Image 1 (cartoon, rainbow, N blue to C red):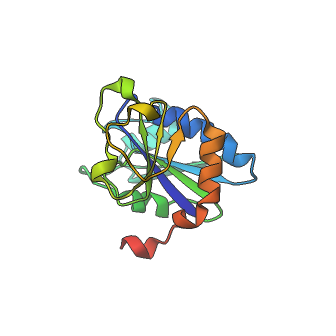
Image 2 (spheres, rainbow, N blue to C red):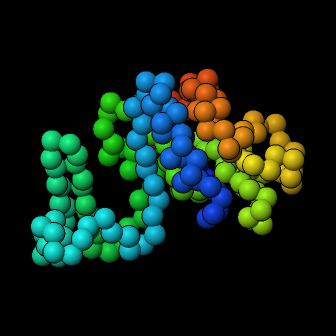
Length: 177
């Protein structure tokens, strides 16, 4: 399995890029999973549903499955800081690529997503784990770089760059222990 992060400030276009990369990679016959960092009190469940009722009753984990999908919900008794590597370990083994959105402080190889219009600073000068920059403002990068600069608006080219450089992204959990 290969894993790559997409890091950038809110509004930079990470979600939009990842959602467009998924079909671009699938068109190449690859199975793709996504790990997404969310805010504190997000929920995918709905009041009144059986799974919600089980969680409200105090279940630590609830797994719900059908012949089409599976979902695992886990409630932490106190706030827990999970590293991206804990979440990757939860994924199905038969996946080709894991696209990680968020976790900008992780030690996972990442593509920085940056737009000049956001007014936010770049991260690549201070983050050795950033291996490329995806941007719609290449001519406005505030600092020169030897890293590849990818067109944020061309997800097929970004997907091809990932595939062409796949060996760099081979995920070895032992490297992160």
